[in-house]
Amino acid sequence: MEENIQKIKKFNRFYLNVVGLYSQYTDGSPYSMSEAMLLFEINERNNATASELSEFFDFDKGYVSRIINDLSDRGLIRRVPSSFDKRKKYLHITELGEKVLRDLSNNASGNVRRMIEEIDHKDIDILIRSMEEIERILSFKKGGKSNA
Amino acid sequence: MEENIQKIKKFNRFYLNVVGLYSQYTDGSPYSMSEAMLLFEINERNNATASELSEFFDFDKGYVSRIINDLSDRGLIRRVPSSFDKRKKYLHITELGEKVLRDLSNNASGNVRRMIEEIDHKDIDILIRSMEEIERILSFKKGGKSNA
DNA sequence: TTATTATGGTTGTTTTTGTCAACTAGTTTT
DNA sequence: AAAACTAGTTGACAAAAACAACCATAATAA
Image (cartoon, rainbow over all chains, first blue to last red):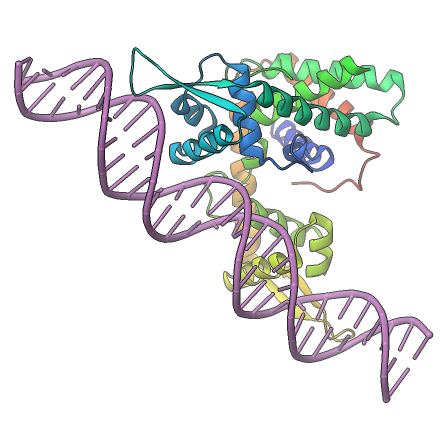
């Protein structure tokens, strides 16, 4: 068991380093990781609210408020006040926001493509299957998050 | 191929979220991610220098200099001037540094342990094997980094 | 009903993290 | 020995993020 834990930690470090996970979407873009994460999640949900997102990402609500404000200023999202609860503002992505998200997504795709371009088909199949197995096995944790 | 890229991206997001990769070592500790990374690598190498580490992690050398200074002030590392090249200072971990590193490592182990504690043996085997496959397939990238 | 407490969000302030540029001292190249 | 380069430090600053006080609204309890 202890040996397995060491192996998993080794994998984690390996993956963090090799894949450059954290910057996969935002490297070379004018958006920060947090902005991209929020934008992504606003698009993912319907009628997201600031406090939901704050809780989901475990970000300070003031910080989230400012980022949302910024995204709104840049025209990537809209804030729609709820008529039931006048404290709430529902967040929606705009067309421009969708475009930005597409660009970020394409950037990430390029990175992944470069990562695997020299690998032969057989190993790519194994790679994908292995990832799917890991997802399956670990997916009881947290509410699976999304797609893009 | 495009489908595989999407699957890999999905896995990346999944893994980032579920495993909490970036904070695996440092959550709940008084050390920042960068400090932990440098400390880890100083321990890993023999006679590391600031500029090596700066290049390795692609961190600003001023930034590295300050962190190293800080680690040194806290007694986690020592700086030993080279007698051959008087510009250089070799970095060595101290006993206290080793202890801190052990604590960080134990913290990460705890996180991993909690992550897998409810999984049955058969799936853990598959999990480990899948990780090893991924490492094998992707390890032509960058010079494999380490162990802890 | 009204007083109390909790929630959603904003804003001012500060801390932490990281970048950029200038600089010193030492080393290598020409 | 002059010019160019390298290792490391430092000051100034920008970006990312946390902390705390606050306002308006809403839910709960008296």
